[in-house]
Amino acid sequence: MTAGPSLSRAQARRVALVAQGFRDPRHTVPTMRTFDRTLSRTAVLQIDSVNVLARAHYMPLFSRMGPYDVDLLRRASEQQPRRIVEYWAHVAAFMPVELWPHMRHRMRAYEARGHEWEAVRHKPELVDSLLAEVAGRGPSTPRDLDEGLPRAKVHWGWNWSDTKKVMEYLFASGRLAVAGRNSAFERLYDLPENVIPREHLDAPEPTVEEASVELLRRAAVAHGVGTEFDLRDYFRMRPELTRPALATLVESGELLPVRIEGWHRQAYLHRDAALPRRVRARALLSPFDPVVWERERTERLFDFHYRIEIYVPEHKRVHGYYVLPFLLGDRIVGRVDLKADRRARTLLVHGAFAEPAAPEDTAAELAAELRDLADWLRLDDIVVGTRGDLAAELAVAVKADPGA
Image: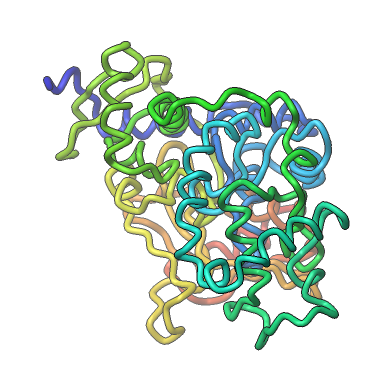
């Protein structure tokens, strides 16, 4: 395959940022239409239980829309007609509900592997029993169904009860769907016909090849430009499914092979990707934001080495526990270790670090973005610690911000 035209690294960055919605104007009051537009850019919202600042699925929306009512996401995921639904799309993620038929080949694969689930193998009667109980009760957590029943469990957490294991199997295989989450962030499982709109639930199942093409297409639209691995990773596709789909999209002209400065692998540009001369973004990026979740791509695009350190022992952490890159213009110019102290109504900045060649206004712009974040999280104060080469300047900028 010929390499095609060339893009500079800066051009590739701008393509990627525009594809992810960082050129869209922020609305004063984001609406459901704003939400729909943003979701069309990201395609998925990764879900993670860490709540030291804000849960992972809320942050990419804030990064693109600015302060918004999080009830938009609840309505989109829990009220009919649902716009989004949980599934194993990237990892655990919200995805557009119309992708449900395109995930059926995954569901069938999970169902076929039921013998690999110990609880299913040893207690197959639980499958029908739990389906019947959910049908009778409506949205339920495994904890709900374990109460008062003779199902052995040691404790909650990673040591799942048999009920939890079987319900996870039923969810992965598409025989249960997620109707919402309770206040403890536990999934509420229900029958798919009570969750998925009929037009999507009853839609003809695409072939594996058709589904793979559609998933790769959406990944290409969301990324703008990327290597085969980048595009494959977006929906965590298998290589043997990605390669034929990639060939189909190249042959149809939807994807254009391109060379990118400093990249050693073939890249592909979506034919509708915009290539602006400038991007004026300002955003804090969650560790689970699509722009940065594939760390090697992040380094290729932004020359920014990033690793999440949640699972690193504290004394070995370089930047902190929950560190967010700071995007300014089309560059990542710094990073901050943040925590929302909800009891004290304070946004804690445990550390602030500048990247090489960060512009002079980095601290002032970051202070303004932190104020927007604090206001959105309903925190009154911002307290900047002393760790990091940007901390002292940021502390001055936060005090100088009239909103602070």
